[in-house]
Image (tube, rainbow, N blue to C red):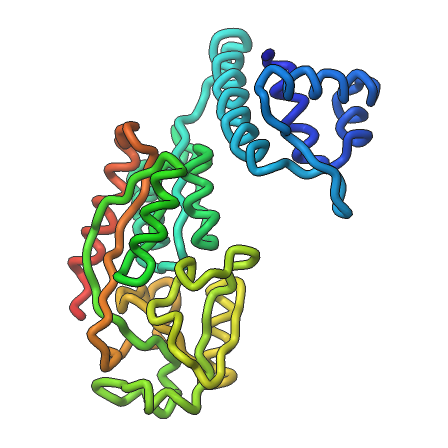
Amino acid sequence: MTLQQLKYAITIADSHSMNEAAKRLFISQPSLSSSIRDLEEELGIELFIRSNRGILPTPDGLEFIGYARQVMGQYRLIEDRYVEKKEIKKKFSVSTQHYTFAVKAFVELVKKIGMDEYECAIHETKTYDVISDVKNFKSEIGILYLNDFNRKMLQKIFKESGVEFKELFPCKTYVYLWKGNPLAGEKRITFEDLEEYPCLSFDQGNHNAFYFAEEVLSTHEYKRIIKANDRATLLNLMVGLNAYTLCSGIICEELNGGDYCAIPLDSEEEMMIGYISRKGVPLSKLGELYLEEIENYRKTISL
């Protein structure tokens, strides 16, 4: 196995086409196919399959390419630092379910460390992608929650992915809605109160099993439910349709604006907010500082 073969595999995965990959690599298509076959024989796995969407990685191929990207990324850093003599910025990346407190903590971290020496990234994304990003070294930390319903299944996925979950803080379930909603003045809200209002949920794409849901009580029989892909759209739907979603109650008016509120749901359902990281890999100094910012912000919120 060579660095060149790793580059070939990554390029095929990115282009979804053997011909297009060959053009990008400036080699012939037969030479590229032959090199990939040799790599598959050496590894003992099939890396790619043909589909109506072109050439796609197999499950084994996805895992391999994740590691290949890491190796090539490290190689480029070595090359830039020691061959090209470039000044390399330190990198930090986090992936998270749609939590404003996670974004707020990231904002505060960047303010403290500055951007001259560091290159930072935050990915607000689907549950499966949070796990995948940490598994494949795209992010150092992934922020998500566990509860009695999803814990067993997600812990199994964590183990298979080589990541581990560590608790940050427990929280109750809150109803998040627009302050113009007729229920916004209530001290506590029941499911009966919510029955005639649309429930909003983050779309989990191809991985839409209940245990991947970002909202607790995902198996409840909702009379009306709408799925959306991003937080901004959810906020617009709250205003336009008097819709609501379920949340941890730890919200950030500075980022979402002051037109929304979180009201306790009349339920004993609890969730444990936590983070995942690669098993056996200690957190970087930036990772530790980021988690400190989450805790600092949580302490400022009285629920």
